[in-house]
Image 1 (cartoon, helix red, strand yellow):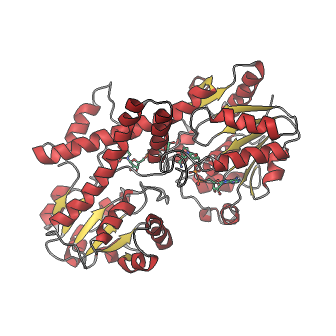
Image 2: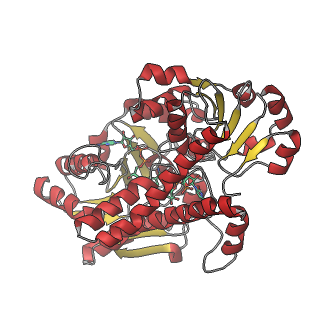
Image 3: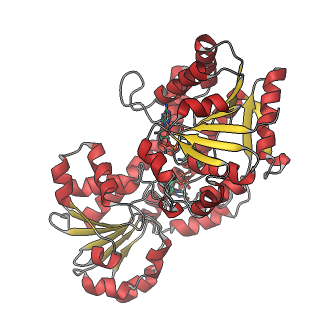
Length: 463
Ligand code: NAD
Ligand code: UDX
């Protein structure tokens, strides 16, 4: 079966970039990305590709090339479902904030809505692809909804989790380590798998396209994120021990990373991992394990989150302690608010939690981030519901320029590893700050020797 029309429900950080790359690499396939969020779709359709709603290096160029040719963004979900042979579900699956599994389980209400809409609209057989990250065995629920509420047409459900990381989404999509496709072992299931394999084969080597059963595919996504996050919590745990013992976590990471069994990636100690995926997916894994009565399995993975929370809190505590146990009315300059560099995404960013802790101590937080707006920072703080919106507003100062943000500060805290922070005129920043001028490098990206020679009191992670 040759696919000629694809619909993707969800024009977010995954749906947008993934479909843009499919459209670029498969000019014969018409790709329509739909979303209920009218503003988001309008932004994707902005005549100036620089204004698309997601910042990812290289993405605006791809959108400029494919949009209007075979890439379309629309709010007409029914029409796109009706026309497509293959429908990707790429909607958000956040942690539940209510009811059973609150704070742990994935909230599947958006997934169910998509399934019901597909069932209602579809008049021909469809392949439905789970692109969102889902708990293992979700395909069963989707299938049941489709088969019981549909118009008697046949549905094949595939699991095709996305492994892109934000900030490198385009590069990851163009040359993925692997593509994973799970499907039924029946003949129809295999046909559906092949149809999707052939889409990716337009630019990905077939050896890198892995096919499995649906459950393995669904569970592999949660497993991959759990393993990646576990490495960060492991090195962060060591960073605390390094600080007590005189070892340097960067040196330890280098030493262990050269062991080919361990490998060098994801060993960067930090103020704690953020992003929309790691915490949510591990909590979900913990919840699934508990629901099968696997308490040891659940406890094992939960430690990754406990360690990460500890690392964020440890960072804010260290700032307060170092600043003579009081930050009240002191200006603390934050360099970076995004959860990592090269993205405007702030979901679960460590910066939010560190700011919240410091505002509890009545510090004035003065932030510069090259890609994040004040409105987003305010929304992030308000979402925690620690205090009123007005109070958050009073404690948050934002600047379009790092030098202004740091002027008159008692301390600078690096929360995101944006490259530009390395090349600043640190002497100029030092001259504009209160003395002693403290730096808390939550990403270990600055040159500590150089900063100390200027006169800064430098605090990295794990040294
Ligand atoms: P997102 O919040 O950026 O985008 C989801 C979009 O879906 C939103 O724009 C929302 O309006 C839309 N939506 C929700 N319900 C809808 C419906 N019924 N009809 C139409 N549109 C609807 O989320 P995201 O970051 O793109 O993540 C999507 C999924 O991909 C999640 O399951 C996530 O775990 C997974 N994932 C994310 C990443 C990442 O780096 N962000 C990486 C891999 C996998
Ligand atoms: C992650 C997975 O990497 C990706 O495969 C999945 O599809 C989605 O979730 P993402 O969250 O976008 O991607 O970025 P990632 O590069 O994994 O970074 C996550 C967080 O960990 C960031 O806050 C980052 O700064 C932090 N991190 C990463 C570290 O603190 N140390 C490291 O060594 C690596």
